[in-house]
Image (tube, rainbow over all chains, first blue to last red; front, top):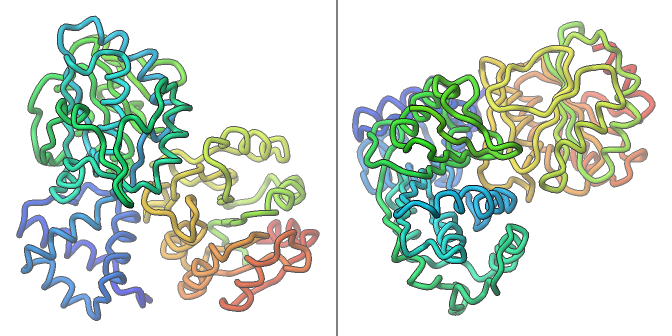
Length: 275
Length: 186
């Protein structure tokens, strides 16, 4: 079996085992094709010369393990990604939640925070931010540090601004940040309503009751069993009549929770209709 | 080769016209799936699937994550995700970094399928303006599969197939007119 790229299937399983035993991070429910690709990518990026050395470093060097987690998980995100989704959030979901005295939102798998700031902007424009709280969680502490800074590359702002306008944004996008050389810093008042925290969807439990849970493009990396388990975690964390938002290619269909949810027509958003 | 387990067709600029010409001539009795990876703008998925569906009596559908890859179906990979094939012959989707400035990347699908289908995989690279797919073809060859390219002389944009011929071991170079017969004989 050729494996000139560096890691074969058995070795993938060995690494998954090591990481579980050494650090308690459980990747056993991750889709293998994607996970293997991430491992090969890291192996190549770091110019590893042998699997044995790579394995030793992952298992014994906690600093390298931090990098390992950061690179193995996918942290590609953008502000107002899928503008039509944010339009639905703005026009269909948040106005309903606006009648509540307080809105708790869980953004699971928030990565570097672009979605958290996007949601805060929509809430602010609907005059709901003052009574909202966004719990933004991720498995990976390094990306949470970045998210907490609220600083993003200036080079992205043109794209984000276009996304924002397409999503129904009503203001001048640039009023939400200050440019500083190659980075922009988003206004502090957006961040006041965010709480960043590590949370591992595989092993951690529910930590609150929410009216809206967003978890977009995370479940695609999990196998069916783990997807169902995580959907049940969300179900147990969502208020009656609360909303669950998934990625454009993700669904609650076929899962044990599906019968309690009604999909908003044309959207990847489901409303919990019975306990 | 009477035991093709999957045909994957990759293309970029200039590849849609080829698909429109070739799909109608592909037999409805083929015993393998056809997976199509084309670069395109985000959010044009259903449009492309619907267009291609008008060109063939085979079942044409957009890939869903965890979906089983079934023979006799034509799968269009969605825009803005990479599509990978798992060992159990199901699709996985992946929203990771672009590869060759592309998502979907042809390389990613070719490479993951190469390991799964090994010598029963056939990959065809069409017209295009970047080299996405070339590394994939190299991997396909390494696992014993077949690498086919569109004859660059017949390509609207010849860079992609020309790079493939330059850098990978190619089993067959096909003009547009030759493609359907070749595919029907797999």
